Amino acid sequence: MSLSRVAVVGGGIIGLAVARELLDRSPGLEVVVYEKEDRVAAHQTGRNSGVVHAGLYYTPGGLKARLCRRGVGLLQEFARAKQVSYQECGKIVVAKDQAELERLKDIYQRATANGVPGIQMIGPEEIAEIEPAAVGVAALHSPTTAIADFAGVAQALAEDIDAAGGEVRLSTEVRSIAEGTASSASSGHGAVRVSAGARGKPGEPGDTEHFDLVITCAGAQSDRIARGCGEDAFPKIVPFYGDYFMLSKQKAAQVNGLIYPVPDPQYPFLGVHITRRYDGEVMLGPNAFLSLGREQYSRLGLSPRDMFDVVRSPGFWKFASQNIPAAVRETRTALSKRVFVGEANKYMPGIALGEVTRGPRGIRAQAMNADGSLVDDFVITGSTRLMHVRNAPSPAATSALAIAEHIVSQALAEERAV
Ligand SMILES: Cc1cc2nc3c(=O)[nH]c(=O)nc-3n(C[C@H](O)[C@H](O)[C@H](O)COP(=O)(O)OP(=O)(O)OC[C@H]3O[C@@H](n4cnc5c(N)ncnc54)[C@H](O)[C@@H]3O)c2cc1C
Image (cartoon, rainbow, N blue to C red; front, side, top):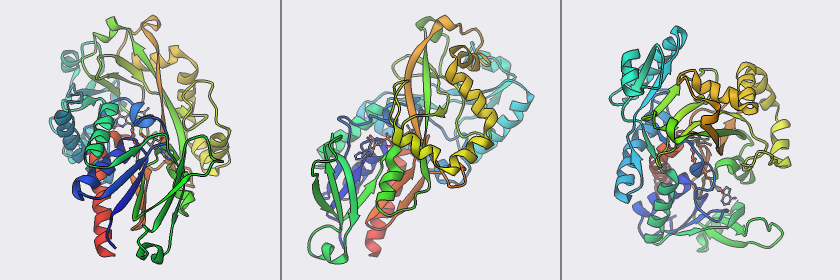
């Protein structure tokens, strides 16, 4: 079997990077990217912290650690070539007491094992030199941690796809995917049938096309798409929203780069941090709280289908019962601006309530196992004809170009083996 037509589902940074990598390695291949929204990067890719993670936290040897380190180099090169904003502003992870310092030393060990360049443990005087507004007993300094315009990266990838003869079909939702028989492939049609149509018109007949290979990179919808193709229901996506607040211009001028707390080891998210953005704004956030919908960004928005999916999952209740202290803390940040800002004030004191205004919201597609444990590493499943990215949490935007290399290598190697 040789590949002539490939479909990619999802116009986020992963789907676009995969499509571009396919065209790069197999010129002449026909590649179609399906995106249900009217623009690329409409969900996680365009609604995140914009941090190019250097690889501090991840288990050495894991897919996340390896693809993050490779992804940083590829992203930096791509951003430079396409003139997309990429700034090495540096980051400090601040320990505010001895207990946090012990945990910070573990992060330092991991970062060293992951080969993160230039990292150093620093004391209060050096903290004051790098980030005069921050305070702590010690910090981990990562000078190469950067910020980037991920939506701009996605747009540049889409332009490359177009220039290489591929097609990004916006406002086109994939409704079903079905693997055919070997005879459908040998009859000249691709073996995988994709039906797609305009979003929000599920009753109307969609267009059906055949492909030799389909790769789904559907972010918050990844479990539903995979399940529709006959895969396991787990890992299941549980959406966690993250709110940001914006610092006033005057206060923002006191922040040089990125200031992070030491993360809670029991919890997968990094805690409310202070993030300089590529456009010069400075954000506080995000917190992490169960979202009432996978794509509901307004504070009152709710998707009954998404909520029902979460509450009927025994795994979710197990997760909730095992994370009560973190849940209490995050509930308080969700309910009170004062508590939210208080989290940042622990390591950057003096931020007054009047110096912050409400900013954007992002929603993380967090994969959860049946037993309620959260899936930490990137997960890619499937067969020679149908592959699914089932978990691509942070730092997947950082790692996108390396994730694409990894997926396309698998796809092309398997193709050779068929
Ligand atoms: C609050 C927050 C902060 C983060 N901070 C960082 C950070 O600082 N650094 C970092 O590296 N990572 C960060 N991340 C993670 C990063 O944003 C994601 O890992 C990454 O964007 C995942 O990309 P994706 O392409 O898989 O998903 P998405 O960007 O969500 O794209 C998936 C796309 O698939 C489309 N789709 C779904 N179903 C269908 C269908 N049936 N038909 C057609 N299209 C479909 C969707 O419309 C969507 O556009 C953060 C994430 C969040 C939410």
